[in-house]
Length: 296
Image 1: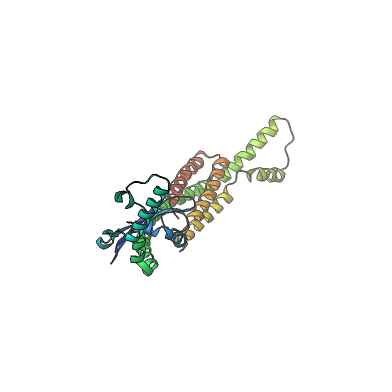
Image 2 (image 1 turned 120 degrees about the horizontal axis):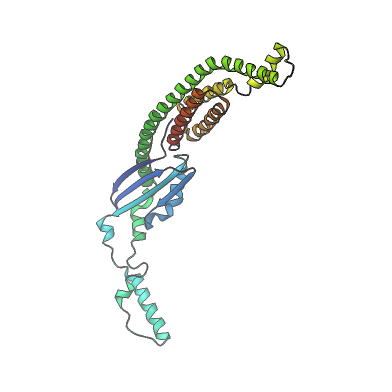
């Protein structure tokens, strides 16, 4: 199944304490990488996001961002008088003991931790429903994200199959040309051997022996096996693309193997038309490789 590594999804949930928005985006990457950005009030949930996301995909660079808009009731924080008084009397006592006693400004105290800190209040407001809320938010965001990745994967599938058909056309042409050229090439090689032996005044071997030696030499430029393996790789490529698994790595490996066979055909064949078709086949393979680099 073709699934792109590139995608985006978002979701928003509204509750009594406010609204939470999740954005999930991903780009191509060779391995699995996860980045999580959370508000202070939810920072302890970062490991939870890592664990959940690792099971949602296989490779790519994924970033999750959660933002919370707290309700007006939570934003309108009140002063914690007990905490403020504690700061005030302790600072006054320390100042007197150091002989630096002076009037302490209330404005300087309100920014100290706990006086106007709404972090604990926010946690209490979300309370026990935090995991339930984050799970629902992640499921909704992941659904939209996977939908976009599947749609993009469908486009890649169509593009790859177009280039794959071009590759098969070149393979068929090479096979047809080889069938017509191999007998002529074999006869031409026999003639060159006879000419070379005659020019050097060496005695010619009998025809059966000459044909046997020529066949051994011809095996080195015979491309029949390469064509057979190339057809097998293409069949495996199509089969892998129709499975329900993530296939990016497997297809990348098969393209490497196909490229190796085409290179061998190009180096073995002496016929200029076959060599040109091999170059065209390499071009089609390169276009396939570019597309499957985007697959998970």
